[in-house]
Image 1 (cartoon, one colour):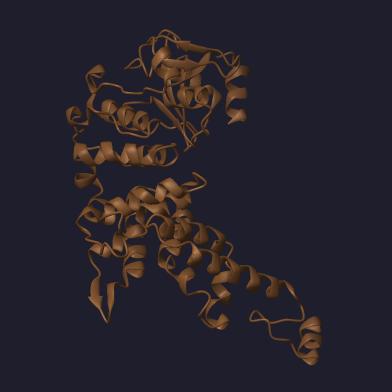
Image 2 (cartoon, one colour):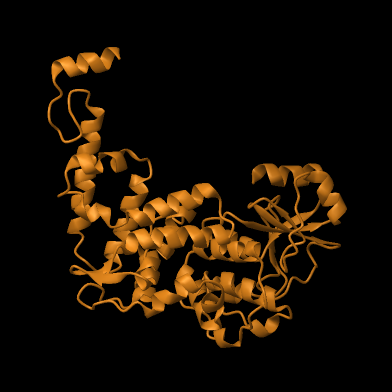
Length: 365
């Protein structure tokens, strides 16, 4: 991102972070992977600076630079009205100075972020901005019912929206906006079906599949997109799984992994993210059995560099159901034990000794 800012400065273009990007900076929140910039120039001038610029026809962007920046080009980057007062909150990356054109400082200082949907004239813009602003508050806005749905949001719009929610401090508030507006039911039915997953109160006192999924976000320690996507989608296979042989949601992990792959592909996520999320969902139940499974069955998974993320998914999943932390810590202890053995040239993964002749053969092969 520093390189992008430097190139804009070298081209002598005046630019400001605006809206959710400026608000995150003011509130000292972790920066989201997608930045929103207002640049004082024409599209032609901006294209001279970035030769890989794209023109996505988004309500909140005139131009796009990969999955890093969305640009609005304007004759006056500071004075341009970008919608609600919250969107007109700007920051100069060069000086660090904030500009409060909408007079929201007192509300912002009190973290009383309650935008009104009536402040917007564009339906798509309203839903997008309103949802991302909601992620700055632990409680969703009170005026969700007045949000209108855009007729056909593009794939990029949906992906930007999802990444913006997941990388915010309170993603649950953003998802509640989309759920109550009807957007999730219409555009992301795989996720909407979680609301129909009836959980046993003995195992999930937090509620149904939707409530459980939302609860997992309160336990995450990082806003990593791959982990956050896995949290959102880890149980979407439950809606089509069947009760069999004492298993309430038999094979839901396998079914969920396939559903998640299709969902992420539909929204244009990279193949790498698709594979990583699919892996996490496919094996999200496995850490619970780690202490009792033969090491030979788990060694390959434990060697996988994604296993530490899998443990983090398992932790959030367990804690969101208010379960005893013992299973998580047992899994962590077994993982660390096996990893130590794998680093020991004299031990197998299960801790048993390697015969001297086998060590010699392995050394010279």
